[in-house]
Amino acid sequence: MYATIWIFTSREKARTPTFQVSDENHRIYEESGHLPENGFYKTAPTPDDIHIAVAGGPGKHSAWVPSFGGTAAISIRVKAPG
Image (cartoon, rainbow, N blue to C red; front, top):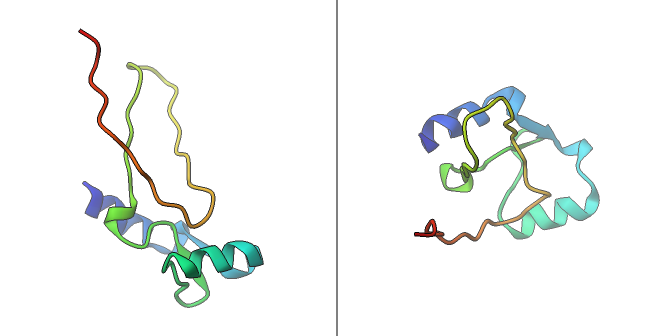
C-alpha cells in the first residue's frame, strides 16, 4: 500500500514548488535530506515517509494532514484497553 501511495504522491500534483517554501523550511528540508527535484519538493520522498493512522469508526469525516516541513514521525503501538 505504501508504494502505491508513494507512486501517487510522486506525480506532478503532489509536489510543492520550491518558490512556495520559506527559506527556513528549505534549510530544514536540506538538513533532513529532502532535496528538490526539477524545482519541486515531493510530498513524500520515499514510501517510508508515509505514515497511515486510522482512528474512530465509520463515518463521513476523514482528513489528510501533511507535516509541517522536514519532520520525521515517531510512533508506538497502543493496545486497546481490555
